Length: 211
Image 1: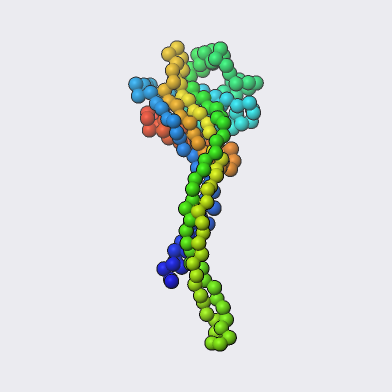
Image 2 (image 1 turned 90 degrees about the vertical axis):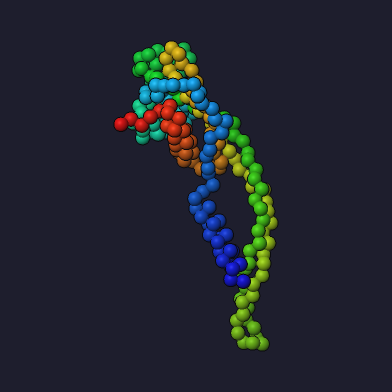
């Protein structure tokens, strides 16, 4: 009986920890990179967040700028150069030439999706203490309680992130879609996504940590 009680306590603690940590998780899917790219690494990057909401545009652009700044990689949010609206293709060449950008990061929101997962059921042992009039003492009884399985449905926020070289020979060199389940705040989501993207760019040598 004691062993079953320990298992029940462990399951309960795991559930409490999961609730405290929150359910939001991010990952990169549909990932691609140009294996023929030989550099140089991107060291001066223009960040463009395609968003109708100007606040969300600034939040996402600032998040990528801050993530790249940890590597001492210079990055500029597009809203500083184009405060009124997102730059179009006709405006980009002049900005690239003027500020000598050698890279461009473009991110945009994709339609949300729904993820369903089957959570298996389990059996826990619970105790109940009763007073025995015949024995004139309290006695503890143990019984099994079955918790049935269920379908867990989660909302998934999706974003596309594309990285381009800048200049006359501009071309895509990295692309991915991020998936974030049950995002709590925009700041939490963009921090997770930016860390994943910048980390992968660093591993692939597309950006390097400046000394």
